[in-house]
Length: 168
Image (cartoon, rainbow, N blue to C red):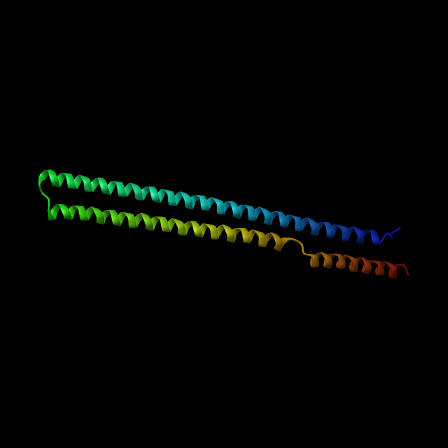
């Protein structure tokens, strides 16, 4: 049977061991949740990127259609008025120039949105990694648990020595 002085030491050791295991499990659960959150953020950004590209394609197609209609109207007006020549050519060239400027602007917006999406992914990854680091950083370590047990054993042995001296 155990001596009465050993019982608190056993309880302390078991308590420290259980605390260590629970802390590590909690850190593991936090890490899993952070990884899942990061993965979901990546999926959202990938979906957003696909939507950006689809919308950009639609906007460019619409702008091309508008340019074609505008030039068709200009050609019709020029043909009906009999004003074919330099002035109508200039109007048509201006229409092409405006379309090109609009297309460049649409593409620049698309590229900027892609950059923003990439930054959002990096931010999600950094946030997830930070959460994981904090979880494992605050979890009890094996060395700390061993030191706690050792400290308890030392404290109990010192208390037993004092008690033994007092009885003598």
